[in-house]
Image (tube, rainbow, N blue to C red):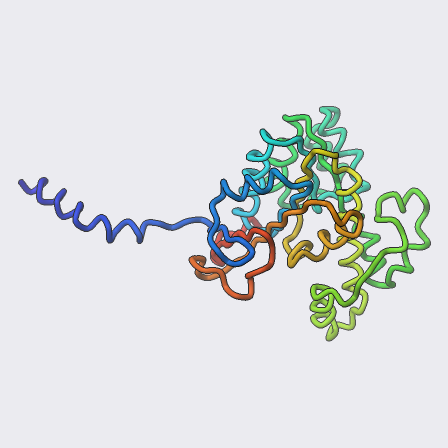
Length: 285
């Protein structure tokens, strides 16, 4: 009888207990801040030429969803993958690994891998390896970006012809009035770093260049980058549109909030799709 009464009480309380147990790891929104279903997003992504997946570098949900989005698109389209996390002068080493001619240890000692490579990016690279996909190192070698941060675009003129193959073609198109660069300059003004926005631009331009160069007609290029490189349809997206205004591009941003059940106004419009995660999510480093 006691057991029967307990079941009755539990059943009566269930509608009140279940909401408290509903603790999603993320909520997906569209550009207007309206909640979206993952499957509906995928149906749109597979119709694009390029998808820019903006991550928070140390966020596990970003990395898990990058892998899931790629898997979801894999059966529908011919894919090429690429990432900010690999610099163009490491492409040869990356190719050797993808083709089974270099071990993961060899890649680690040859390429400049990020410290969270094994946990966060190796799954993407290995997915490409298993499915015989290209994986493009899109970023400018960091030493050249550092040159720009110190001496502007002019500092790249002294590079050799071979070194210039690893960056976007010179001269670099640059619009200092783009809101993202304006904001960066305002933040850096007190540190007296007037070329920091140009250093950001050379990264954006180089990533866009190698995406555009390797995007196959009829195929889908999925690119993984820091969210700030493609937010508000600027950065990489802006440079891609300069290369081809008709290119179909979808952007994804990742944002962090204390409460994720509604998107904060400051995040609305950051991308076509916005992954919202709680601010106390355990970081990967």
